[in-house]
Image 1 (tube, rainbow, N blue to C red):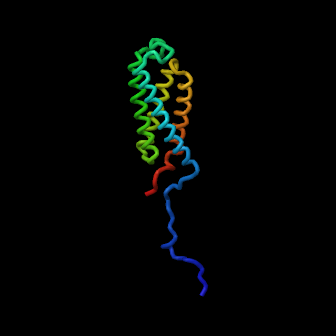
Image 2: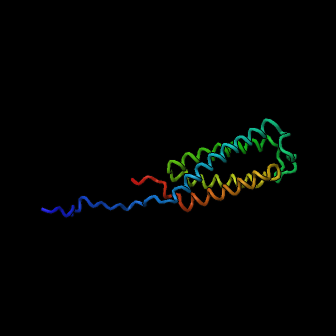
Image 3: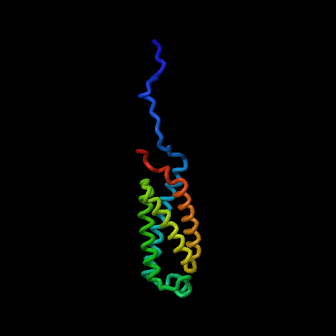
Length: 147
């Protein structure tokens, strides 16, 4: 007898779950950029808390004229939150993706307001945050585990 292969419908399984594609790398990139932005933002916050004279501009020269202690706490809280959201994004959590988009926007806004004190870093953070928002909104669903 010749075996022509299994023709029963039990062996043919079709999945309606989306397959992950090469764009999944964008989500991993976004998660690691969130890790980096979070750690560096937290370090920037600690520097602002410990040493007010580190930044070349006085706090009255910033877009929002508050002292560096307030800026330190803002950077520290946003940095820790962005890092935590990056962990959630890497796990494929949908809620973490939504929080990540919001926190990336907040991080970019904080960097824009603080840009007088750290212009090079501010432009870099804003650019990376825009890439993170793009990756999470366009390709975010591809990292989820199909269940």
